[in-house]
Amino acid sequence: YNEYKSYLRMSNCAYPLPSPKEPDTPRSFRSDDFLYVESSYKTDYEDASLTPNRRLFMCLAMCLAVFSTNLVSSMCAPFYPRSAASHGIDSDLTGSILGIYYATTVIASPFMAIAMSKIGHANLLQMGLFLVGTSSLVFGGIDYLDNSVAYAVVSFILRALQGLGCAATDTAVFAIASARFNKNLGKVNSYLNSCIGISFMLGPPLGGLIYAWSNFTLPFITSSALCFASCVLVNLAFRNLRESQLAKKDSVISPKVVLTKSLHLLSRIRFSWIAVTAMFGTACTSFLDPTLEPYLEASGYNNTAIVGVFYLVRDIAFTIGTPPIGTLLDSYKFNPNIVLVIGAIIAGVGYILLGVVGIFFKVFVTVRICIALVFIGVGQAPVFSATLSAMYGEAAVLGLKQDDDFCAIIAAVQNFAFYGGLWAGSVVSGAVTYYNGFPMSTALFGTSVIGVSLLHLLIHVCVPKRITYTSLEDLESEFQY
Image (cartoon, rainbow, N blue to C red; front, side, top):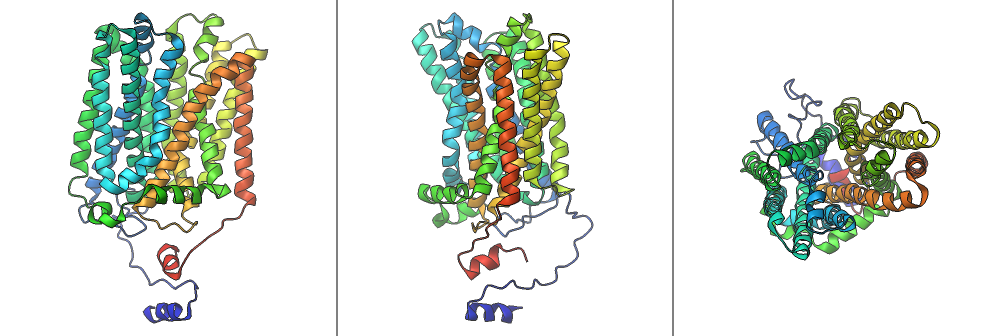
């Protein structure tokens, strides 16, 4: 085998090499259990300390990290507009303050790949949790500001810092999932997204309950304490683990390298359209935020608790539907692109049903809206769970070296698509609804989501994969023999 490799180097050929026979895998190390599977490429992560219990601890720490950061973003939704109005802040500025969270995350996510290569995954994750917890703790004191300008400026800055911390946390978490659990990426990704769904589901009612029981400050103290606890747990879970970037100072990637590799990926239509479909799919989450409550109030639903129940139906459907997607991707080896397309189509059908209810049907409106929201929640589960696997699979054949920087860039592109869709959905929703009304705008949006998904399927079927390698060494290190 070594002589054959030497011959290929001497003759400058690039034919596939026969792989040596691998020893049988012990029964306790099953390929369908993410607790036992090592990375498919060799990095400094393959440490003897990664026992099954250690892997479980790492996974639990990552789940708690994404739960706590997303809980901060959703916990203030029921009571912050009321506090802002009492300080003389109008609703438009309040929406901008809440929306800067997503805008900051979109802008900061690509730069987190650079920071991750310099300080490591675990350190970036802890820094993000600490930043979110600290800004949330300070946010709890802005209710004592009497000046409306100071209130708005401080709220804007602290909300942006929360988005920056969320960008660091989410990018680090999904990069760790790609690096340490890449053979069972679907399962781990589904668990992480389930925790995100639970945080969005519990955040508003929990924040409203704590606010009603105490004051403006206590909900933020609670969420910041959870972030600090998650930071401690992450430190314990990732302690004494070697990270290749920390061991090699010359491996720090520059902004130019990140931009070059990102453009190399996005220049391929198969990869870039995954990001487009993910943006439209995640926009289904935020498209209803500015418009559903006014529409229901105009339809006679004056009780805000009823509106909360509608959102709860959607979030429950998303949380329940996410874990099975990981099983489909890993145990049954479903194509993540097909799963992503099916999920986006289901969410689009839910929006069309929501529009049809407002246009044609005037009876059993509550039941019909609940059914439409179940479709939206179930459709979002494959979008959030399959995007990272789809991007990872497509990027793996484009000639990029599958190392830690590779995982960081993929995670950054995914976060850019996710939070870009969340931000764009809320912004576009208000403008489209203003000109077309709620029923027609939801039907048009659902139709556009289905159209983008079908175009994704057409590209996936018709456009061939283009495997590009720059040298024989790249071929030997990247190709799966």
